[in-house]
Length: 253
Image: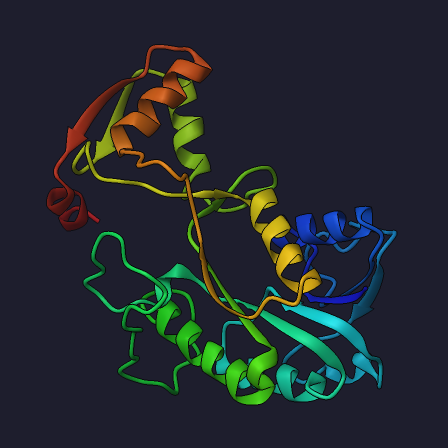
């Protein structure tokens, strides 16, 4: 398979590239050359920019594209339009943040989606993130039709994680001492390993699966207390958890 990844030089996209090449597929990465540009020398690298620099794609054809770096509908549309006649499947990496609040326990992919107050915004860091991903999903479906595959991951963790949503707690518990713990100890938490996410992406495109998929874990319910205590038990140390009301934490910023 000839696979194009928009992004792919860090975290889940990089794991996807590595797994795809290990399985014998030919991988092309299109990126700006700003993040881990020297990674994956065995892949083909096209240095360009999704926002006005798509000429590097030329007239090439690929069996599938995985879009790991789409946040703004205008930019996603440009990529989708440029590739619509030259790819098979178009897998768009969305987010579990696309759903409208409140989100009930056990919700499915059919739950109502968020609607932006200002659909013209391109500020994708912050409250508009989920709503912009909703619009990006719509763009991909509009341009690619039944070749669109939408994946909505939850919190992604694991090796090469550059975010602090999961790794902060591991580091903090490892330090030990009095650890401020947020809100209700029984609140459920979910996350999924980047390598599992990458394997799922690869399964979808190699088997021609279409549709919309949430991707998170673990399969069994996990509370915040159990997460922190298992981290302490695994890492060792003397971490002691002090649970503080969520409303107070939010009020204190």
